[in-house]
Length: 458
Image 1 (cartoon, helix red, strand yellow):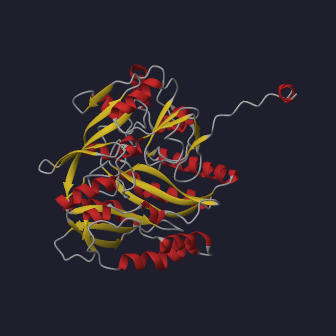
Image 2 (spheres, rainbow, N blue to C red):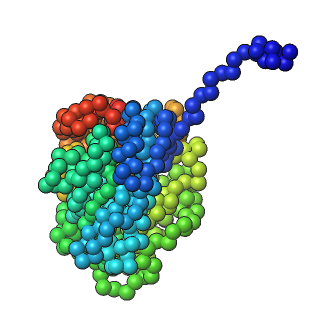
């Protein structure tokens, strides 16, 4: 009787596959994927590529902000477990690492030898492979993008084959992988030039906007400046505060060789909250916080300044609002006019921009999709936005106007951020994309490597 009763019950519903979300730092635009694999070796990456029948995307620290590390319904390769130092030659100043190694992990190995990373982002949390994939840059004077310090890349292609790429061998793959956001293969190993660790001293100068380009040229010609950026502060964004770090032999004011891990940044978090939520909080930064931070003398090791933790920018919560970046690269000759036009767009939309950090780069003659076709100033826009749908739409509106403004001055926008650009804006910013499409048809004819960025634009 019991058995007969069971037979009359309705059938059980099919068990749904578990939802796997690949998020990014902002909390916006997580991507639902079918599977996540965390390889430990190049061979495991190659096997995962051969075994998976569908789309594949690659991720490291997940600091890109618009789904660049995942593709809906696809395989996500989580590279963070591939973090070994493979070879280090202190005399030649060369290191070879797995692509999932974070810059800070490399710094831990280099600092005792008096060595430093040649070029990286301003914060040390990013993975080396991720930095190459977005062709990142930092505040370094004269170095340009990270590809300029890359000697060789190991790549896994769409058929699971493993190739070595340099400027002389498989050069097309080398150029496409740097700043290619995983379009043509998986970066599994990176060979890098290194630099000498040196003492550096901070100087702070107030410079008129009209004079900044010429002022920076004189600074660069001195040849002793390692890091530099200029802060443009709200509400007018028209008075650069230039912060430079020059080599020095002076006594240290900061004895630590690297920024200690796991520090609390509550004070910084409270300051950011005050600047964005309190009445006239924008003036709090320009009139009080910024002068206090920069007034103290500072002499430290290059490695200390390069080992900053992105946690100092992290808010206490991202549930109601989040902190995001945009970046624009504009020819030096147009910088002054562009800066004024950019500030006008920010004010027009009442965007909550905390600051615009100005850096410099020479022309990039290597990457297939260069963001610096000529000598440029980059403008890194750090802003706060609400997370609800209407706020995302409004952010998209002013972002597209910001992109259009950069394009009008012969500039380009950076691709690791929210995917608000129109297809036309992308094509105008990166007209070299036709060469990337042609190469991809050759090495990935089934379009296996993708992500939300390339699904939108490639």
